[in-house]
Length: 278
Image (cartoon, rainbow, N blue to C red):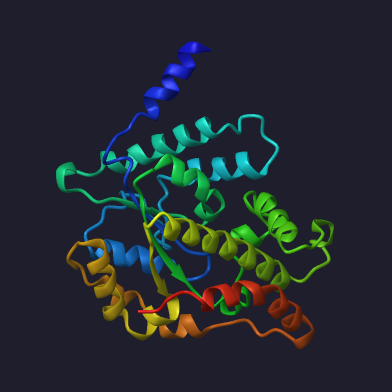
């Protein structure tokens, strides 16, 4: 047992580069891949394994396990295990960085919203960049896996979202999909807003951009991100990534569904409205 504890301590010892990633945060289905492209356009390394949404596949297993440990009924849910798991996966990204002396690295997964306290502890010098989309637009689009009760990760996250919104998870099977999306959106964005409040209190404010602003003025938002990050823009992928048609697509909801969705989302929409704008 003592040997295992020493092993964990070695894994968690301070490492300047490992301790200071750029963590990109956004609700799944809310356009967060635009944030990843902004980071890539500023020369930030995100490893060699990215999916079409520019999620960091090298980090995915550890993040998913961390969410399950936190929200599920697993016995191996100690903070030390979560931290060591996340740091081991982060090293996979660092191994792909050649010039570590001048490196800046990042990762993005929507499921990070469920483990923000653990991320703050695991990566004590991390910086955070956030993309927020109007919650109503997000909730009326195609659902993300965190809002699907049949998905492995949704089996943990969607009941937690219902409890957060004061709804009984026993009603999940009978409720319409847009209601699932609304509860998931409200829960995850409340977690994100709590995180922004904590970072502001620590005088380490995050970079916050709105999906709608990136769609309207991609180069202006990229320039603002570049200034905040302190790295020049070296790529030009963001403009090609902006898709006006996809951004405006939404699912039609009848009034009997739309009305409860709007009530669920109203508190977090008010929180978002209070965010400062540039």
